[in-house]
Length: 229
Image 1 (cartoon, helix red, strand yellow):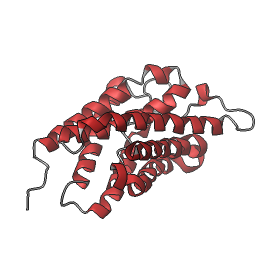
Image 2 (image 1 turned 180 degrees about the vertical axis):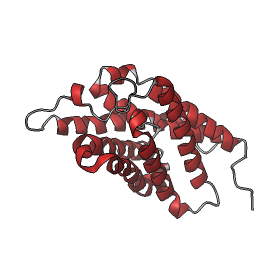
Image 3 (image 1 turned 45 degrees about the horizontal axis):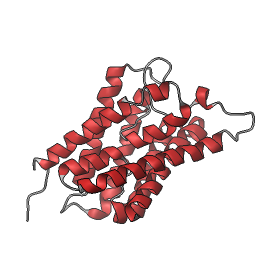
C-alpha cells in the first residue's frame, strides 16, 4: 500500500506540474521553463518518496528495473497501476483548472500537454523521428536511473542527476514529441485531449518500454554494473 500511494502521488505531481507548466504557463516560461518543470518535479518526488518506492513514477522505469533485477516482478503491477492512476488524476486536476479559465479553454483545440507527432503537432516531425527519439531517450534515461541508484553510487545525488537528465531530454525533444519517456505521463493527458492523442498513444507506450527493456538488459548483463568491492 505504501508503494502504491507513493507512486500515485509522485506520478500525479509529475503530470500536474510538468504538463501544467506547458498548458498554464508555456507562453511565459518557454521550452526551457517547461523542461525544468518536469525535471524539478521529478527531483522533488525523488527525495520525497524515493525512500518508500524508489520513485519510479513511470511504467518504463519499473519495467527496466524488473529486467535489470532491481525490482521484484511481483510488485511491478502495483507500481504500474498506481502510476497510471496518478497520471490520470493529475491530468484530471489540470483539466478542471484549465477549463475554469475566463473566456473558456478548448482542450480539443489547445491540448492538455499530450504527446504527439506529425502535421499540426509542434515541430511536425515524422513517426520514425518520434519513435527513435522516444526509444533512445528512454534508454538513456533509464540507464542514468539504474546507474545513479546502483550500489556504490552517491545516493544523495541520485535524485538530482535523474531530474537533470529529464530536463535535458525535454530541452532536446519537446519539439519532436512533447517528450514522453513515460507511458503513464502520456496516458493521463491523452484521455482528456482525445482525438489524435488517443490514436498516437501507442507509440508513447511501445517505444519507452522497448528503450527501458534495453537499458535493463544492459545492466542485467553486468556491463554497466559496478564491480564488487
